[in-house]
Image (tube, rainbow over all chains, first blue to last red; front, top):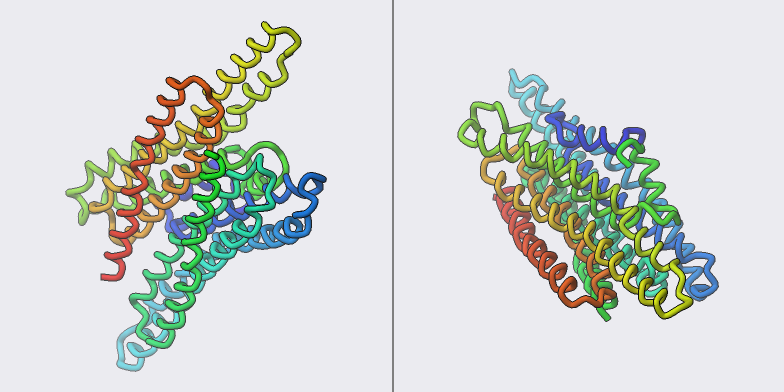
Length: 207
Length: 207
């Protein structure tokens, strides 16, 4: 994905190919959010006027770069996330043992398939928190970009959550279901902060 | 932008270059939304099971393709949107006449600069409405992608709205301000529909 042109990637997304799809789109939206956090940091760092925020901005930049790389990687991983489930469905189901082995393989595949969108949700939540951390120290000329970063990461978070849910409903192991749902729920808490960041920025623009 | 690789474009977005920035990011998020609508249509069209929705899906596909091209074009236009304002600020301000001409040029530039994000907001609203139109007829295997499309377009819409607002606050002509604000407000109505689409899809996934 990373070496594809924007035009080609969008055409692949639009096509009837199984991947990229909504999972990769969520990863891309998270990457856009992280990139905008980096941009705001880069346009704030080194300016004497914002010297008091220099340390926060430098740390945020390092974290945003890491999160962008992770988001792109997860967008690429998404294509393979479901391949284990697809392979498991193709296993033989002639005998009772084969049926049991197939069901177990499908179930294990579903848990694995839920991990990628869950990771996208976690990365997106981190990007939202990072947007919140730079909000007060940002160069005011790019304040709106902090809000766009939070908005893009929020879209990634809620999109990834849907993709986790799709797998969750088919997982029969209650303990696994509980673990995934609880981790997702924790990530989803960041939605409220994303809304708050957008409102704070809108208020300052109109002030 | 369209011939840039994903990796390079994200790096440009993250850098301290003046463009691409939040405006281009909003255009990209809109393009991702439109591409996902196309994907859902492409995975529904031609399947006998969904024959009754064939006509709606074919029309939606054509519209989604048009909206994706428009969104990419607007993301590219965004870099130039503010150049008129920047040029106007550099005009001479020695005499009273020069001052008046400069102020008039800045004001005209601000109105022009608001048009690009306003167009992104309108395109995003159209993508949300299109997601709503395909919701019931979509191949259920890609139902979540309809919600991801709406979510991505909603992020584009609210991001573009902030970029319109930034220009609006500096525009002195009340009639122009009124016209832009009212057009933006109309586009923003689609946010409610985007939320409703996401909730409807989440409900069906868990059903």
